[in-house]
Length: 88
Image (cartoon, rainbow, N blue to C red):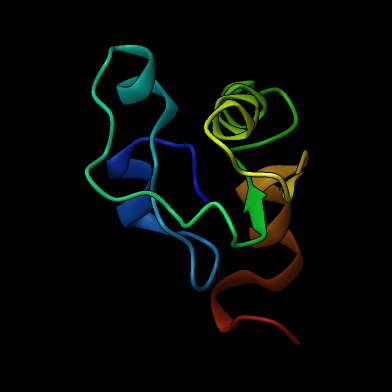
């Protein structure tokens, strides 16, 4: 689950990710579709300095999601590890 803005998500995201921007939730705009509470989730944002993923993960847990993991290093670390060519 990508907590970044839709613009950042459009530029690039982890394979299979869905965009649930924390900023929109913070502003009271809840997405029409959220991952199922039974589905294990990996939540991330830009990098280790971004708090959006932590806030989104906490919010998802309050909404019944039990298996929520946080990818602290975020999209930038993933990009630096795999780049444009994907996983090696």
